Image: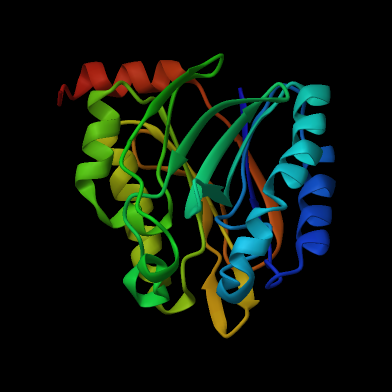
Length: 245
């Protein structure tokens, strides 16, 4: 199967421009593929207007779901969502035009004051799809081995990571992405923002890593759609060769 990660510069609060970039990228991918978008790709961490942006999440999802259905693809990114008056940073998985799963961010990033604006998620889920068993982790959660151990124990074969990881910590991002692939013996597909969003410079460094820890596709700091072919037989092979769970 073909997997993609779309790295781009997210413009703070500019939903129209950000979504335009995403739709253009989705138009360029193969049918039947899976695609990861950055965290908060539609608006960035535009906290003063986040509740207002959350009211447009379903409008954005509708636009992306149309191309998801048309091309029979899986698309995941994170969106601001409102549930019973509470704001969440939510990964939403679209497949063939339908929402098949949602997962709120559990580990909120203190440096960006996420805990002040967002509520904490509680469920670390694995989703059964036509691509295999898929787990989702969000940005800062890459630092927590317990998150990934739970995904692995629940059978995840592919882990998708929407991210807005700061440039000052780019070295950590590269190391942790490979380390989590090795320890979970899974494919990791990470999409990060690049360039400046608001006052923050983002790291880029989006990648697709195989279950042996090999980097299959990578981009440093430019807007780019990267891709690689992934094969779940490699997951089975490494898990047989080095039994861990």
